[in-house]
Every structure is written in C-alpha cells, then in structure tokens.
Image (cartoon, rainbow, N blue to C red; front, side):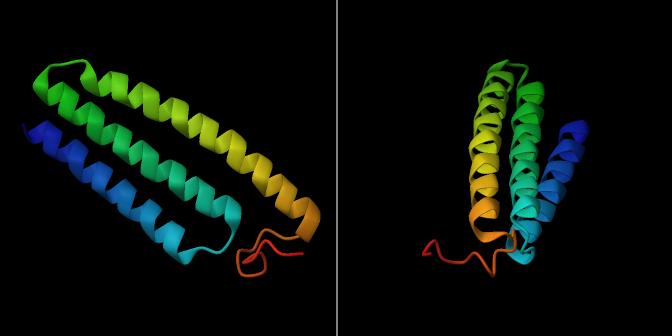
Length: 100
C-alpha cells in the first residue's frame, strides 16, 4: 500500500506540473508537451491502481491512453506546422484567433 501511495504522489506531482505548464506557458509546443505530461501522469495512476489490485485492467487502459496520446501528438504537430507556416510564430498570444 505504501508503494502505491508513492506512485500516486508522483503522478499528482507530474499532473500538477503539466497543468501549470498548460495554464502559464504561451508557446504551443510547450503546451503540447505539458498535455503529454498530464497523460503520462494519468497512466501512472492507472498502473499504480492496477498493481495494487493485482489486475491487468490498468495496463489495458494505459495502452489505450498511449495510443490516444500518439494520435494527439501527430495531429497536434500537423496543426502546429500549419499554423507556423501561415503565421510565422508559435506564441499563443499572437495566434489567438484563426482569422486571417
């Protein structure tokens, strides 16, 4: 039980760092990295609970979260490249609207 608490505390710390990064940072790439950090924290939570319960459900859910994160990264990177080509910047303040 004590080991699960350590994993959950680490997951909470990682999720908090990611959340602060999403709220505070203004560079689109940094925001995407913080979202990935938050997804990894959720994976760590799923795996900690699965280990504590002795089941494989957490591993299955973590696998699907990794697949969704990979798709999000591919689509997000394509959007970032398109925005950079049209606007010439990745700062969210300057790309706040999608109007030309």
